[in-house]
Amino acid sequence: DNYHKVLAENQRLYNEVQELKGNIRVYCRIRPFLPGQNQKSTTIDYIGESGELLIVNPSKQGKDGHRMFKFNKVFDQAASQAEIFSDIQPLIRSVLDGYNVCIFAYGQTGSGKTYTMSGPISASVEDWGVNYRALSDLFEISENRRNSYFYEVGVQMVEIYNEQVRDLLVDDGPQKRLGVWSSTQPNGLAVPDASVHPVKSTSDVLQLMHIGQTNRAVGSTALNERSSRSHSILTVHVRGVDLKTGSTSRGCLHLIDLAGSERVERSEATGDRLKEAQHINKSLSALGDVIFALAQKNTHVPYRNSKLTQVLQSSLGGQAKTLMFVQINPDIESYSETISTLKFAERVSGVELGAARSNK
Ligand code: ADP
Image 1 (spheres, helix red, strand yellow):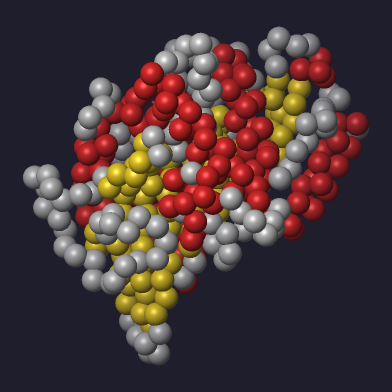
Image 2: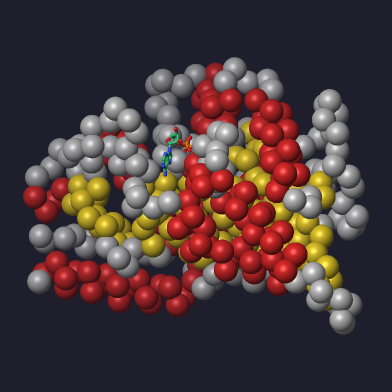
């Protein structure tokens, strides 16, 4: 009973905050156990249908060992890529109506950020992540509406590593550029010289992503290492022309696979590793500060504190819509990273339930 009272109180608090913050949503996704992991040792105690998540501390007994979090939604281990996409489809389609949308994946390395955003390497269609599904959906809609609208779609892909922005689709390699985006400078991503590539089909997109992935690996010992320490941003620009009235709209979708949020022990990191860790730390907390300020409707939003927030400035705030996937590793070894990830998400969403515990 007490437990349900706590849940009801959380829900009330949560609804209040929801009304305040408008266009910001936070979803939590729990990664399944990987083959060989001990399924019994998990930190996940309970997942509620309205976005409650109860985490258990393996080293504490009883109610003191529990901590409740609340999000717009929690996707458990069984959630499929298709299920996730169908939930966010309306958000993605709003780009066709001229909205700017940012979708972030946040979490420690190995928590499933890339899986959610792109899918596993050489994924089959069912395993496709948000990015391919989003583009193929946009193509489908534009095809369906072809008698009334003309849509032009262009793609950019950049990486931010140590506060430096790098275009991942530069055409100085052996790859051919697919054409030239005919619109003048698109709005949305503040990297004036990053190339924009027109795309007409999912196969164009797959080709570009492949180029981007290949370029991303250059200069790093292992792709995995590099990708976990840099942010990657895939931006889809859509320009629509209403064939009847001639009016145009521009919207853009940013799909952001963030650098791993794991804390690096000061004592362990030196040189380049320490520098990387400091840059990541700084940019993730700057992102948290920006979203928090927007959720609170503060007049001052501190965009200038990192490259990531500067680059996305025109798509964060105002009429723009933001969704953050907070990715969680279910295993006990990840307990302290999980708590720190969830605290970040809690702050971003403006709902802090720290004191509210379950009394099961
Ligand atoms: P991150 O990008 O956060 O470092 P990855 O997306 O690379 O993490 O995921 C780590 C591993 O877990 C990969 O082998 C990935 O295929 C697997 N994985 C992550 N999420 C899922 C999921 N929902 N279903 C199946 N496998 C997953």
